[in-house]
Image (cartoon, one colour):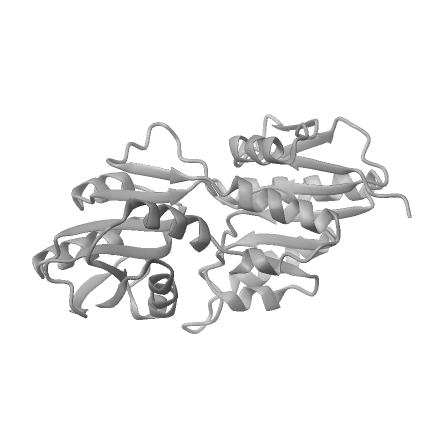
Length: 313
C-alpha cells in the first residue's frame, strides 16, 4: 500500500498555532488562500496539489465564529473536490458547544447543528480538544478524537511546586473535571455554589470546601465574559484564600473579559493557545501554554494509523 503524504492547512482563525503544529511535525504548512469578497463572503483556494494526500484542516470556531465556521466548511469542500484521499477537521476550539441540549422551550441545539454542517462537507474524522460537553462527540456519525489540555496544564502546575493547593470548580458541573485534575497535581477539591439568572451572568452564593490559607486554582474549560471566574476569585479571597490562579483551556475573552480578569487580582491566568488572543486584549500575569505538541502527536498517529488513546489521559 502506498503511504499517504501528509498535508496541513489552516483557515484564518489561528495561523500561529498551525505554524507551530507544522514545526512540530517537521513539515511546511499547506499553501492556501483564504480571503473575503467585498460583500464579506469567504473565498478559498488550495494553492497546491492534494490529490491522494492525507489532509488535516486546523480551524478553531472562535470569534468571528460564523466566518471561521464558513471558512472551515469551504476549505474541506475544496479539498474534497481536489481529490484529497482523507480529510481530518482539527478543531482546537469547538464553537457553539455550550448549546448542547434544550434547557428551555423553543431553543436550538446549536452544537448538533454545527456537527451536521461539518458532516455535510464530508470530512473523514474530527480531532478536537476539551469539548464543553462530552456528549457532543455523539452528535457526529464519523470518528471523533477528543484530546484534553489537562496533561499539558498538569505538567506546568507540578513544575511550579505550589504548596497547599486546592483545585476549585467555578460551578457544580465542573466538579468532576476539578477532582480528576486534583489527582494529577496532588490538590484537594472545592466547589463554588452559584446561580446563573441568565446567559453570561452568574451570582456566587457559597464556597464548598476548605480554602482558608490555601493556594486556589480555579479550573474551567473556557473563559468567555470572565464574570464567573472573576466573581469566584472574589468569593475565594473573601473566604480566606492565600492566592487564586485561574486556568482554562479556551480563552474566548469576549467583551470586557480582560478588564474583569484584571479586577480579579489573579496571581496567574493560564490559558492554552487554542484561540488566538489579539494583542489589544491585555491580561495581567497571563501565561500561555501551547497545545501544538499534543495536536502534532495526534496528527502524526492518525496519519500512521496508530493508537492515540494515550493522549486522552
